[in-house]
Image (cartoon, rainbow, N blue to C red):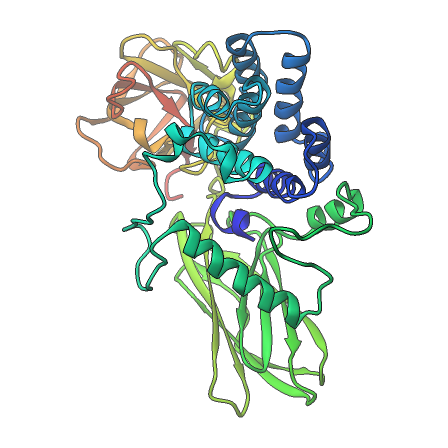
Length: 473
């Protein structure tokens, strides 16, 4: 649940599942290799987190030193990049593998791998604490931290003053919950585990994998409502987007429930309607949303759930990141794109200028044209399949942190003699440049970028898509 809210889905979720199962099993099992096998059983064998963890384990088994093992993990997780789950979970495992059972050496090994160091150190520290108890943490590591809890990150409640008090309160609440559900679990310093525990449980893992990560819920006194977006909420403009609303009746009586969609301009959906929810039953309601062809890149909406005859109303808010579709009549279809250069890590990327895919502000790597890292100017050129009248030029940026600022647009009938149709010296829109020009017959269009907005990579130029449209479109 936490991963779905804060860590994205797929690899971020698998990382949390791996860590949660690893630490849970560590209360019972102490063998490191068995624990790693248990944790791996709860995530797909072919996911990136599993691959990175196995890479770390093999590096240790093959006798590589820590630095070489770290470089191998970086290489094998390059497709997901920095500050992502696969690499950092593997760095945590490297600390454990190369720490030789020493708390300080283990923590330093994980943190010295770099990247998301607060997470790797904290995750490994908690695991070692579970395995060895607080007595296993040397005084030189305990003393600077101490027992006292001082926080400004979370407010609004009277937090316990020490770690010991927090632990006591957590255990007290756990005992109440276990008793409420009559769970056969005992908590205590001398509690023993009885019977066999299925620590490695592929069936349970697969049931977790099958859950939709795109669910949002509202819990009312009389019912629970869950909105399942069913896919990443970045629908294509003009394409129907099916969603499901699941209602669960908490009462032994049938209920009538009104569903009202409240949507921002550019986002459309069903009219308000009432459904019949059977007594103590469950009902799935399908709905269809749609994003207008020309809409903002971020839209907000909410689903209002109102049981008829009751005063309580539930609201499920959600957000949509839209992916604009190419406009009808785009003249670049069937054309050819060329450029002054390409980034050496993205060979062949020039063709993506007219592939019909307009990227979002957070999803552009591998879906854009990126020039080589050499000084401006950079240029991108489109040759149409045949000469046509051009009346509008739409240029879509890729990375909003590196959009064109100073640029010139030119057209040509033969690719030799060029005519300037627009010029900008200080363009500020990070995502799109939409220019209506005097109609001109041409077969070639060229955009020359003199300066881009990135200060970190001043020589870089990049674009997502170029659209050329007939007059009046």
